[in-house]
Length: 253
Ligand code: NI
Image (tube, rainbow, N blue to C red):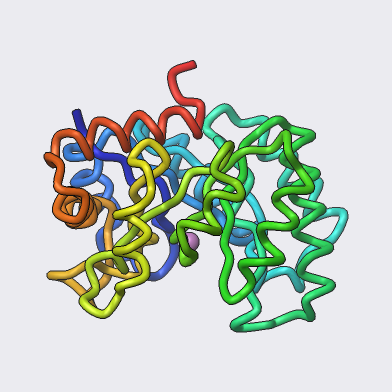
């Protein structure tokens, strides 16, 4: 069995020199990748690439730092993209109180609009949350019939339990960083059948490539770290997390 990159951003300037090689390496080594949109442009790029490569899928949505562009028209465009069968989810959406490009109330309002959209098109959501855990969990719990992924999950196991009935938790390169006790503790406590693996390429490159551009095949380094922390085999990590990814993204149904 092969790993999955459940969250990457393979488009734009970071890959303009060698996109084909990056995709080829991913195709050879991984089961599939999910290219995540953060605004209308990147959502379209993700869908375009998903239609070029069998093993690539897309999500569409507007990231909380990019909601200045959000409007009824944009929402309609995003909803139209959902008709493409390679579009798996709405995301990444959520709250970001670190950058705070827009006031909390506006972020929450647009987060709810996109949760409604996910409900309407019957797709899971990919959630970004930064310095906003409590409000994020509260809003997720307003939508008990929507399931999804908390990507690059930054919270505690106690908090995760509040939505663990229908959310999976994305673990990426930060797990391999030496000073990241919080994520290591979360991975130790969380059941493997709720974890999925991601890179967030081109960002958050794992050790031993930290500081360089990230790419999907580096999920391997995250998987190895999970195996060490949970004291289980790499094979078990691969099998369970790949099945988790297929379940939440509804692949092969
Ligand atoms: Ni991302």
